[in-house]
Every structure is written in structure tokens, then in C-alpha cells.
Length: 146
Image 1: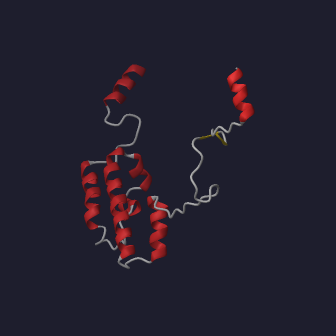
Image 2 (image 1 turned 120 degrees about the vertical axis):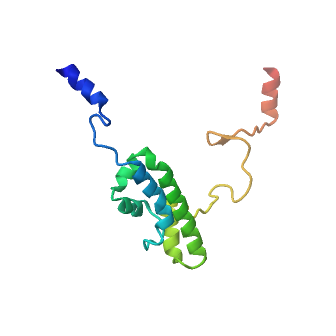
Image 3 (image 1 turned 135 degrees about the horizontal axis):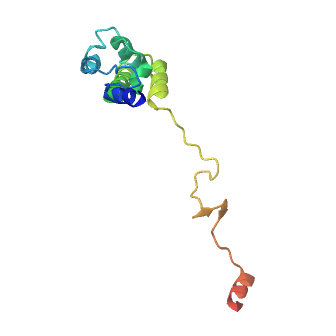
């Protein structure tokens, strides 16, 4: 009886799990989202918007590799819309800065020199000390006698 049960499970389309949400129709509808998000009243395309459009949970979209290209395209389009909307005044600058930093890794960076006051470092530096060799006459005498 156990062997028969295993055989039946292996012949099932989705043994031991729920049927996939990524049907061809769902994948096509996901791809269409990039063309219809504006008509849905969204300011930018989002993964959450896609999830609502498809009637799925956003975690399902991230968990299914079939949606990965669409999710990457949404992120790319959202970044583009934020950059252009920030430049042409469609979005408030603080909102744009926040969204680009929080969702797209674009953060303002300031380089600060805490050690050299803008001068070149001695070359090379190892373990916090310089490899520069400073010799005096007594060091030179010790080297020659060795």
C-alpha cells in the first residue's frame, strides 16, 4: 500500500503541495501589468500593485521564479519613473529621495577624510604602521656588520 501511494504521488502534477499559481494566463497578466499600471491609477509600478492586480500575495510572487523577470522589470520601471518624476517636478524631492534610497539603493554619500587632511598616504600601509624605512648611521652600521 505504501509503494502504491508513493507511485501515485509521483504521478501527480504537484505532489505534496498546492497547485502552482503561475499558470500561463497568470504570467501573461503579470507581464501586462507593466503596460496598465498607469491606467490603474498608480503613481509608480510596484510589486504590491502587481500582487493586487493578480489577486496573489506579494510573497507568492517573490517565491515563484516564474515571476522574477517581471519583478525585475517592475523595479527598473519604478526607478526610472522616480528619477524622472523627481527631476520634472511630478514627485516631491524628499519623497523621491526616500523612495530611491529605500527601494533602489541610491543613497547620498559624502566622502570624509579623517586621517590625512587630503595628503597622500605613505605607501604602503600595513597593520597601522608605515613600511617607510628610516635609517640613521647606527642602523646602517648594524646592517653592514651582519
